Image (cartoon, rainbow over all chains, first blue to last red):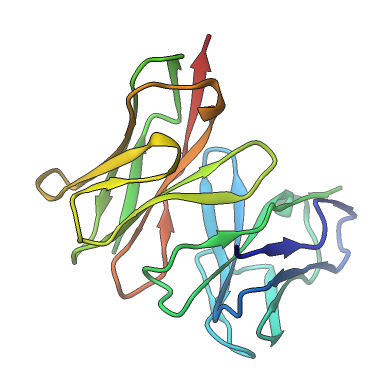
Length: 114
Length: 112
């Protein structure tokens, strides 16, 4: 079974802090994704990556950056956290074909910015 | 551009009753379609996936979905609801060229 592990279930940060959300997958998947989930808005794609050191912007990249130095790890970075970034963050991975391979999700990180 | 519409942000059914969650998609090419489920405090997990092999797709936990091209729909059904089916359900679409796009989700409530 694919396992996607997000390092923290809950995080509380202050406005202006730099925040790192870590995600690791153990199935040698090429593709990794970061989504944020908000009530009534569903899942919105922030960034994704098809390979090591490769990244592409999703639908809402503003205020975020990512890093993929190793195939199994995909980090989401909030350069200067703001209260409107309070949300549930979900990491996912998938196999070779990103458009038809099912996504495997971590359990999420609930981030609160005060 | 592809898109997904889920009708009803909340659906309530009685235990033992039919579950019907609606999903309509927009895609310029034959799509791949997915249903995911999210239980409280967990990530999403795949329920089922349509890839054009058969229009009726069976998934886990007794769920199934039927692809209807003429209606651009991919509704999710289960004949008899169980309390453990209470969760949020997401329909998703991919048009073979791009990333997977999710609907806004439908929260299913099961009434005893």
